[in-house]
Length: 178
Image 1 (tube, rainbow, N blue to C red):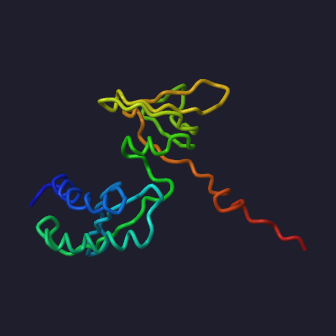
Image 2 (tube, rainbow, N blue to C red; image 1 turned 90 degrees about the vertical axis):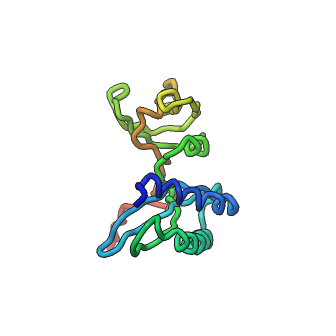
Image 3 (cartoon, rainbow, N blue to C red; image 1 turned 30 degrees about the vertical axis):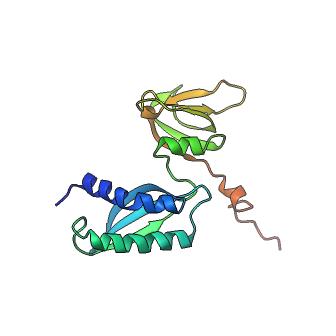
């Protein structure tokens, strides 16, 4: 039986060309379980997001391809294709590049200036040969100089979504006047 990393590599080889033909990219492949079944979830994204039609096309393609490569994942499983959502975690340098100028949240392994959580504008991404050479430049406060973080020190990074303004109002329930 192939190793998990071999299976992921083969699945990536299978799906990448098809996704590229649709103008999409593979964000991640996740494996999970539900009672009596395995789940294989392909998370895809594109410059303008992912539609239900995109997910359905990719699902049909993968169903056929995975039937031809049954040795990769023996037994029954559920196949899912989905978008990563607005607040997806950044996994690759391209995620940082795509979100330049946007408000992000990052969490660091090692505290910086006494804290681990930072929210600010993603000013710049400087790729390096390694994660310790790659820099994320974040402008937390306009009155202060930007901060630099190595990719190696970032445990989580994602867009910071203002859900209240996104949905056009406050989450708080308004009191009724009698």
